[in-house]
Amino acid sequence: MVGVPVSVCVPAFNAARTITETIDSIRAQDFGDIEIVVLDNASTDGTGDLVRSMRDERLRLHTNDTVLPMTENWNRVMSLADGELVKLVCADDLITPDCLSAQVETLRDERIAVAGAKFDVIDDEGAVLARARGLAGLIGRRSSRAAIRTFVRKLPDDLCPTAAFLFRRREFEATGGFRTDFFYAMDIDLVARLCARGGFFGHNRPLAVSRASMFNHSSTTSTLSKFSDVVRFNHHARREHRELVRPVDVFAGDVTVARQAVVRLGARARQLAGRG
Image (cartoon, rainbow, N blue to C red; front, top):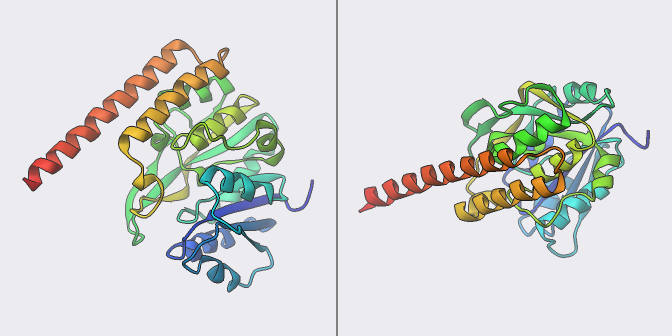
């Protein structure tokens, strides 16, 4: 084992509103042997100063000289990790106190490549919007085939946020890390490639908290861009994992995207009509 068993990596850009709460959730883990690696992406709002003010020997702060594209920044923060196991937590999300202890135990089984979990959703003020979401069809142990087919058939929001995943650093490095091919489906693309190397285990309780914020990058991305990204991921997964993903899985995934697009467009139309 190199360094500490677990590295929790936090890429942060102008995250002063939430970075303290995020890091405090990591520091509160009941699994003690961790490091917390924060990469400040040249923030201008004092994010780095807030992290520097935290006195914790497990915490390491790195700062980019210039703002990097998100994918490059995520890969860089992962490259700074020393742990055998790694987790990426966005600077506005949280993990529950028992998250690492539960998922580390799962990954003692070398046949499991990725551990995931259900998650809660909160708003910018911390109010709970939804509990125990995600992982439909992915609870318990799932084979590579079953996991990747489910990734293709579901929307990323129906699975779980990046903070809910734990995996091995050596396997992350072997995949080449996060790819620039995708944005909205970037983390699911990575997890699919990891699961091509081993099974998936889904914890049937919330171990992460996703913040539905008006300030995060996803909220400023158009619905059309998100859905087209998912469709591209579906078809790319079929080409890359032809022995695992069937044409019927891609079709089912595309239908899911189309149905959700209709729902979103209908909601938008009703909103506009109400304003009129």
